[in-house]
Image (cartoon, rainbow, N blue to C red; front, side, top):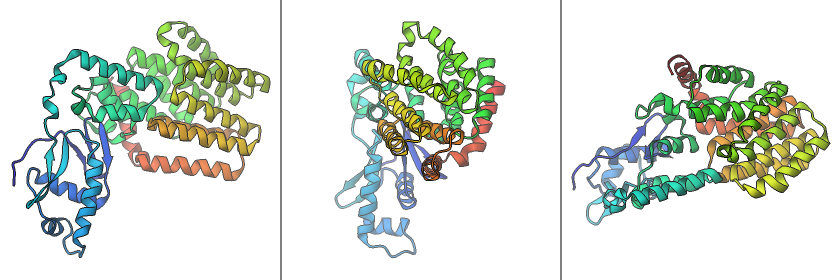
Length: 388
């Protein structure tokens, strides 16, 4: 049998999700039922027959059904560093802690801690979200602990909206900005622009977040809300700030956003081409960040849409989306689809193309559960506006 033990698990019954140390896994209904039973009886072991009786009552599955579900559940739980489904000969299956991770001596070594966070920051800089998640979920095995910033940020990276909206473990001020960015990527840009301007006016964000919002994130909203001239005016502030070496890594995305704003503003082809040449020939080779490469392909694809070069446009948009999906930065993938769809409202392409990316955007909203969470999202944003 065994004894019970404590786990750092966050279980969402409504969404069939389980989270641990910044990592969330999505389960199917029967996988969740099996997990829930094993979790309630953690430290104990059950035979196939016992599991069939408990998880599949009044059904007639074969013993292989248990093995298949155990295999899939075990594979998903492998993302967690502190727990696993173990098999004990003669006793069966049970949920148990992994052996000894929390006792690695390196967990007390400051040099190891600093080195791991330096690597994490590099992955962050280069836009390698999947690499970040590997480090996050293996922190016990590697013998270090995420700091408070990355403990929250990994939820943003993987699109864990439920956690951002509902957790009580992190103060609202620390997760407000991440939730706000998701809020920006849905609905009418004009409505979102009003909220973002209020956030800036009230100075609700940390200094770094405030600066990022005012010199970069709000530019797209101005453009998509039909006010590209305001974005162009704001870019003067952006480039003034970018003279500070501390913000040099903002240059690629700012240049790409500037190209997008000029595209929406209807600037001449010669100007657009000059900007594109600088981005391709100078900016991206010097700073080959994954997110920026994906975003540039998106903007270039939108440029081809404006030129009615449908085949090239679609290829570039698909390539950009693939790069962003491969990066593992869920918000950037959603943001690209938001950008595409609202650009298509301003400059309608062929109906087939418009419908294709509208469907992709709707699918992503559904996958993230954003549509269902809009009331909670609105409530959190209003709470932040009133209390922070």
